[in-house]
Image (tube, rainbow, N blue to C red):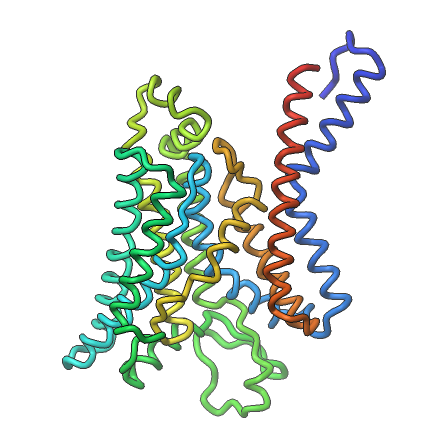
Length: 373
């Protein structure tokens, strides 16, 4: 691309520099992720391995699923503070329905199927209420979702009778959950090669510890969810309307967009992806826990911001949130391998959020500069 000839040499150089900086500000998260991988690979023993990378991907699924819906909300200049406990509500609802159906003599597969459906259905309720409060009642998103935070938290603990987990899951049900939540389509066993879907029953314990899961089920499920919602946001009219609403809600109304209905659907999507995260959490840990997503709330917001979504709305994408989720997962895993206290994880994530906001501000300043050139 050639620069206009009427620009002076200094102006052309300034424009080139600003475009280069603009490229860096839009792509910094990818370079940052690569830098983290290189740093921890050089400093952390065992970090650079297929087994560890598969573990990082699996660890990132909870944050990634939460950040998908959060991205939609933040693009519309909102925020959902209730999704951490929506994850827990979905987890305990699914576990309780599975337990009760299995204890009543139903087939375990049937109990699991109905339980998953119930968990996802219940997860839609907080999103629906949040959407109505924000769109119809005009309650600020921060206040509406903060109130829902407390309601969903209480509901999740009511379903567990005040316990930290849903008790009474049978051994058969737990094993069925574990096979999916901790299973893989493809395994690699040193000195034996690849195995599809299941490990050999005669595998000795010393080899079992060395097995690498190349395609864990939670990662595959999360990847499918990412592809679906990334396509909706980037390639459909619904996605385009989402950006328009985030840019200017008043302009969106004038252009004929049903803003209220759209916002309600956005918050339902956010709760739905949190519900998927809650179900997967149950499958991975074979225990329905109210606090399953509590600690991941900050991380999900961080992933969205790190990925380049503007907190003031109108900008962002799902792939950015995916990269942000991977950055947080790599940070957490790397710090653990380096034997650094887990408390520092919160500090590091907070620092990265501030860096991301500063980069977003720099990008906005560059856009204003380019508009004036």
